[in-house]
Length: 319
Image 1 (tube, rainbow, N blue to C red):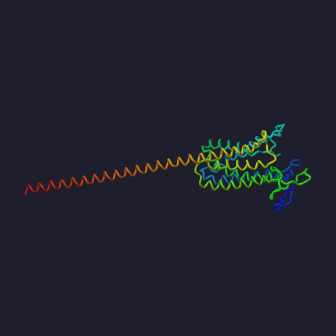
Image 2 (image 1 turned 90 degrees about the vertical axis):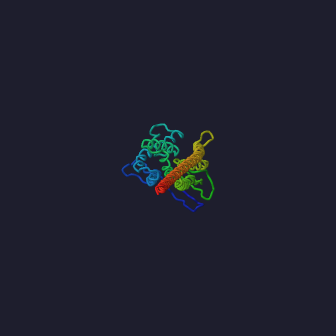
């Protein structure tokens, strides 16, 4: 049971139970956690978004569902493996697979998910970048909702602060409430804003991959900043690994976004140039054909006039 309080906003204090409900036929089971319910809700809404917009990329909903069958469990496995590899401390196989006890890393889910999307898209003869463009906004939906699972668990918060929107937390074992940056909220709002931007960008999409690169740059930049406030970061020496990945994602995503935009613009200009040249050639050919017809007509008229004159001279001689 966790107690949450936002004194600066006049919200709370209130208590939140991590367990939504228990199954009566499983006496020793800890119950169904709110975290799992919230994550599931995010997945459902993300898949729904993709299916609602799949026609935009000419992708069938059946292909989307086929992808989801592999993507959802694959992303969960990737998120768990990333967490286990980098955080460590697991001694048995049961400990490694017990993700229901917590321990999923979003970067692992994104990496594994991207590989699965590419593999399934190639198998179905769909351009991977088209599918990834379609999924990128949906990913932000899932992430924005999923962060509220951290809120229920009173985790993934930032360092202590006295800002107006500070979040007070009192968990079992604590004797005094402490106030932290609500970094879960920062990232959730950042993802919602990114979703709006990507939806608007989609309407003026210039090339396949543009929405994907926009997502990578946007999320990477936000995660880089927010990670600097968190207290549970994984370090590599003195460097926060998630912050480093966020920085690299921002740089790479921005470079790819701009580079492909320049390339697509050049291709468009070349295509327009060819089209203009082809149009001009057609006009020239058309003019030449018209001139040939005029010359032929004039020649026919001249020949007719000559024949008439010759006939007139013969008649004159006969007279």
